[in-house]
Image 1 (tube, one colour):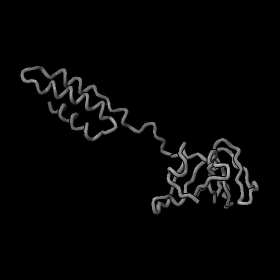
Image 2 (tube, rainbow, N blue to C red; image 1 turned 180 degrees about the vertical axis):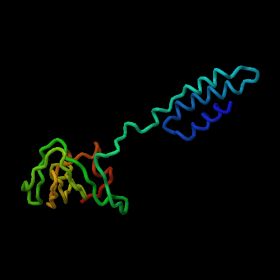
Image 3 (cartoon, rainbow, N blue to C red; image 1 turned 60 degrees about the vertical axis):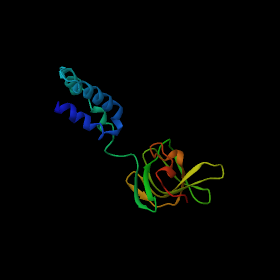
Image 4 (cartoon, one colour; image 1 turned 45 degrees about the vertical axis):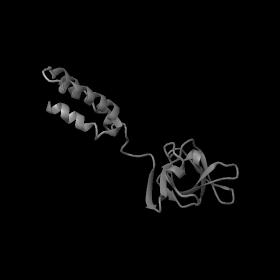
Length: 159
């Protein structure tokens, strides 16, 4: 009986599993509330509930990107790897100043849309192999891995 109440209490603590837990808890509480009936089946059903889906085993300990210095609702900068390379770091004058390859990391401080409407990430530092470069320019957001997110949804500020 105590196990059934314990699982029913867990339903409020695990909102992601509320549908699973609520259904199990409701079944267990209906069986437990019937006077004169054997509740061993309800307890057995409650014991077989698995919470393995609530663990974070699929979450990587090393995130793809990381953001720092939150101020006024935005991050100061984010570090992220290059994907879909090679990617060109382009200066403000439109000249290609550095070729970045998959796995190179960049520090992005803000984003903007170019004259074609594509999102560009403003880069202030590049980590290429074991060297750091401090070349200011922009890289297409397509080539910066924010795990499928746009820079404004991280949120990074607009340039």
